[in-house]
Image (cartoon, rainbow, N blue to C red):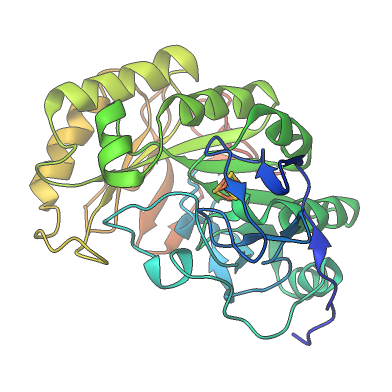
Length: 337
Ligand code: SF4
């Protein structure tokens, strides 16, 4: 892609406060002095104003399987043009993408929304996924790309930690078709100790996204000794079931040593045990980041037939007829158009 955008964008969602800029995009509410950036490293103050410093600065762009986001109930087997920027408003010690999430923008030239949408249109892509780093800290670019992609008939997908204030979320969500939201734990102490954030805004964002009519799937990275107890599994699955609905897909993802954490990877047996516990409350619980025979397949909740068979990123959706189970004809809830 050729770079097509050099403008420095003033940020949305900030107020002047005593000669500095108070960012109101996410719950951190950083008060940013001139020449400095907020916690996310990509929203920067100059001359008493706040700027979206990472606007259009893309760290990576790939055509990925939708399953890789992960989304299992949204266009199974299709590809999606996936872009990432820089920065994050969390500081997870186990971050699996820390090289881009824990850095200020490193790309020298900026791309425009037209560049992104044009690249997505020319591939066999269902749309654009904003992923790899935390997309919400690049709010303005994601919003502008999403608006253009929507006009071109493309879908928009967010892969996010869900840490955003309700007002900007309300502006963005009508442009978004599907989200995978990371719920890292059901304990406040986990978010404060390991992520540098708080849990309530994340859960509230999940509810807001669902209420906005978006397709929502949840990911939970399972880290041995930190968030892998049976109690936490039941608490997470119970909350998803009662708040977002029992057919909401949950992805249990294996942790691998990264960034500041060198504990051993999550054993597959831990994920399988957690999966069984979560299946007591939820219909669709998947295991990811490890080989798990059958653990990635989608099963009809009515007749038990296999709707979608997955082996790695090889996907066989022949159990579906449109969005319905080919065997019993019931609505699978899987988005296919
Ligand atoms: S988006 Fe960034 S600058 Fe704004 S409040 Fe959150 S961490 Fe701070």
